[in-house]
Length: 270
Ligand code: SF4
Image (tube, rainbow, N blue to C red; front, side):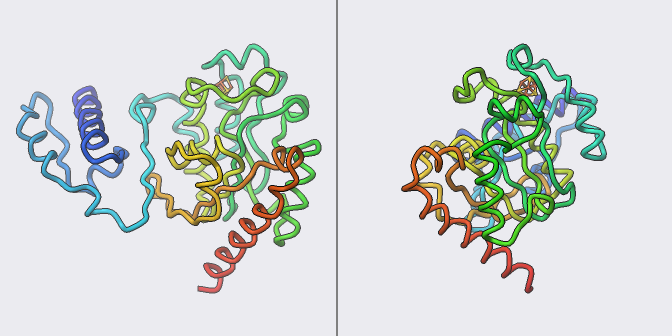
């Protein structure tokens, strides 16, 4: 039964992705009134039926539906973690990608485990790797200042990265590393259940939005993010490390975070 369900679900997902240019997580299948086949059932007629469904018509305007990915279908022990502490314990000795060989510390993330706001960066740098904490050092201090400027403290938000281990020499994350590590981030999202997500840098933005656009095209906008039963407002802005390299990006970042705060305040009032 399990195998049949998995295979057919993957087929549906592939089909939907290919033909409608979007991906549907498995949890959405029921919501979209797609019947899960019985074991041994001939799925050919079902696939024809699926072909006729206009998925986009069923989604609210401006939605970003995040692909759950094949990882969602292969059960692993850590997926049952019912708190962030348990999840940390279950994944902090991960060796799924070669980055475990060069890391000094696994960097799970820090802050409020029930935060309304989640900040997602790219990967730990040298100082983060040394301390086992995200956004420390110069870029981290700048992030603290940015948060302070829009009336957030580091303690009230949750801060983490797409990758939990440092890429050597701070090189860009490789796609295969992101694929391996991202499920942990999505589990963190499920546990924290943020209402607002701020992606710091191109990789965080592209990964969360399943986009290929450069940062300049992703920033300055509010996306309706949906993953499983989580909905959040999502924005993308520059990574603090990039601001240290290019101070010209400070102004657009300031505009982004002000808009982010405004949206947050608006939701809090309602
Ligand atoms: S980067 Fe992620 S997938 Fe790779 S070893 Fe570290 S925790 Fe595991």
